[in-house]
Amino acid sequence: GQQLNQSPQSMFIQEGEDVSMNCTSSSIFNTWLWYKQDPGEGPVLLIALYKAGELTSNGRLTAQFGITRKDSFLNISASIPSDVGIYFCAGPATGANSKLTFGKGITLSVRP
Amino acid sequence: DVKVTQSSRYLVKRTGEKVFLECVQDMDHENMFWYRQDPGLGLRLIYFSYDVKMKEKGDIPEGYSVSREKKERFSLILESASTNQTSMYLCASSLATANGYTFGSGTRLTVV
Image: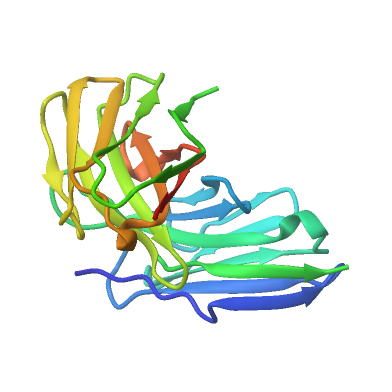
């Protein structure tokens, strides 16, 4: 089946730094979604991308839909302690009644 | 605001017990999902439902069953809880996959 790859599993940055994470697939996706999960909570949708090349921002977060449709990028600028959490990418699997395929997520730690 | 409510944040159950995890959404969504989340394994789909009284197996249905008697409620049942079912359980609902899922806050289940 379709898979979304996120690596590394964990990232450690200093408060104030920018961080970039990507999500790749061997299959084409027509929608890319980025979620954040705060510790002890459920994932929350941050950004949705629907068009190849699209660049969308949500505050300090910017995400891009890759031109090849096989990847997407999420950038966080000027990180703050509350940015800690798990960041998941997701996209609709192919087929009728398609479900979302999720990457395994990247755990971000921010050192004050 | 759209809401998915999971009845318990934390549960401790004994091996062999029958366990019910309840999820209610107030958005009139047709699609509902149950995932479990374990470190390093990401989100794994247990069961999902596209309509009342309808259910489909996800990737790891063994040891679980579900019930969807009403549109707003999707219950996950552990027929005979085992220690390897200790996990974080997340319920989600959606109107259309491309718009993403709305997740509940999760239930952290410990089976002793």
